[in-house]
Every structure is written in structure tokens, then in C-alpha cells.
Image (cartoon, rainbow, N blue to C red; front, side, top):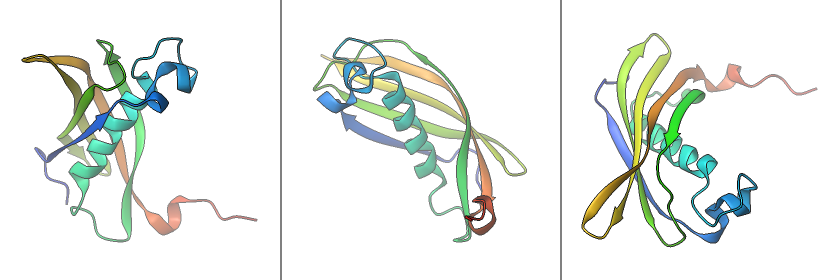
Length: 128
């Protein structure tokens, strides 16, 4: 049973391989939006940790994120996810990400994410 209000976060230091240049999603040496989204999804997965029986897992279905500010290489980024609704197999999250700039915490991303709870054994199609 997934509990509304469950939350978790992940922290990552932006490296050269995390940049828009490295991923081909831009030409600046800043955190790529696909990496920002991956961090938010990782936080959502962690928020579900321990709440699902072993035969169940979650899969991402929808992401709606605004990337609000750049994060250069070396920046520490914190992504957070909180369960805001559970409707049958669907779990909705509020997601966000921040970074420290001096003494100030700066929002670098905000949005929502949806995951579905699925059966591990029946989710993947049979291989020929």
C-alpha cells in the first residue's frame, strides 16, 4: 500500500557526462533536462521503496517538468519527490529540484510525475 505524503530525495553533483553537451540536448555545459528528469524519477522510486510487495514494481508513465535555472558542472543538485495521490495502480508525485548558490537555495525544476504499480512477471512481453 502506497502512503500519500511519502517522500524521498536524491543528491547528485553535476559532472561532465550530465551536461546538455554530453547528452546532445543542447550546447552548453550545464545540467541536461533529461538528467534532471531522471533524478526526479529516481527520487520517486525511492519514495516508493519498501511500500510494494516483491512481485510488484513501478514504471514511469508521465513527466511534466519545467527546468527553471542552469546548473553548471560541479553544482550539487537535490531532487525531491512526494506522493500526492494514489488512484488504484496510479501514483502521482509532486517533483522538484534545487541547488545551493551561496547561502541561497535556488529552484531549478518543478513539476509532476505519474508512475503505475505493475506486476513484475506480467509487465514485460514474452521474448520470441
